[in-house]
Amino acid sequence: MRKLIYALLLIPGVAFTAPDPGYQPLEFLAGHCWKGIFPGGKQTDEHCFTWVYGGKFLRDRHVVRAEGKPDALGESIYFYDSAAKQLQYLYIESDGGFSRGPVAIDKDSLVFPDTTFVENGKTMVYRSRWQHGSANTYDVVTEFQSQASWVPGFKVHMEQGGEAKAP
Image 1 (cartoon, one colour):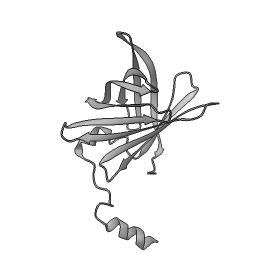
Image 2 (cartoon, rainbow, N blue to C red):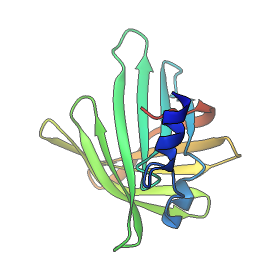
Image 3 (tube, rainbow, N blue to C red):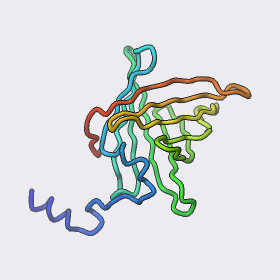
Image 4 (cartoon, rainbow, N blue to C red):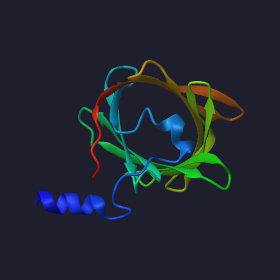
């Protein structure tokens, strides 16, 4: 079995290559799981980030858990659009909703500008900011659009909680 694994690592395209430099702002997330508690302490959010296809994309699988409710699952695929020279993402979730958009960089923050979340024919506009703290923390601040103004959504402090494993 060990010989088979070594042989697979020698096949071109199977071994991991370094991700595109455009992914640098996301690299601190990769290979780790992060967990936070929503305000009120009744829900948790866990994100696990893994490189896919030899570093060409970054996958974020997450689960929101609340006692007495089924887990809410979601997945984001981050990709570097080399033509636009911009990080982007596609988010899908277990209830059928989705959103997509660019990821901007502002100092130590990942900024997810206004975007539309679509689910069951309804839409909601939101924006989010992930502020990188220490080596093993980041803070998420999400706001929602209500008519012509922005209203606070939630703030979650995320802490690194283990190594992410590829599926």
